[in-house]
Image: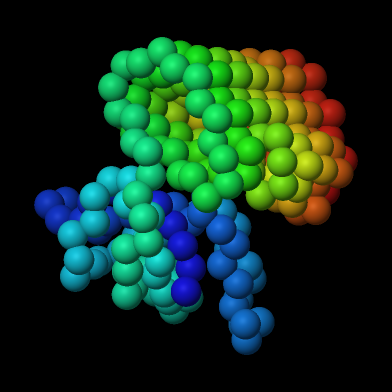
Length: 205
């Protein structure tokens, strides 16, 4: 089983959607590992809500998630707020259509910023397994992810400085970066199709 967090409910137009919160590995070795932050569509016989944490089976043939089972619920923020957050191990936080000012420290927990959210402030992953996912949103402050964490950014319209040192996995794709982009000593990294207004410093290959 894999685990993810629901960012779009099924029904109406299109399937449901979740983003993976951990690495999906195939024990047979027939497919490559899927990292945290990967978007998976699903059709469910349960009625998940946005922010639900679910265990599911990934079907590599269709790319769909099946057999969803409830596993918890994230703290979901969807309005305009000023707040500071410390996200600890085992805690999930989702910003969905939110406009937030403040600062966020991730200490082994999971943060997802999705659904056209905007966040103004510093985001920092400070310990191993701290996971930061930003998808289709705006982050105007600095993002820092180090020490065996996971950082995945895709289609971020505007973001400040991004730094990653010694991460287990870092992926920055299709982003407009107003500050510096620095990715060093990641076990695995992907940098593609970014517009960087500051300097780029990376050993990512």
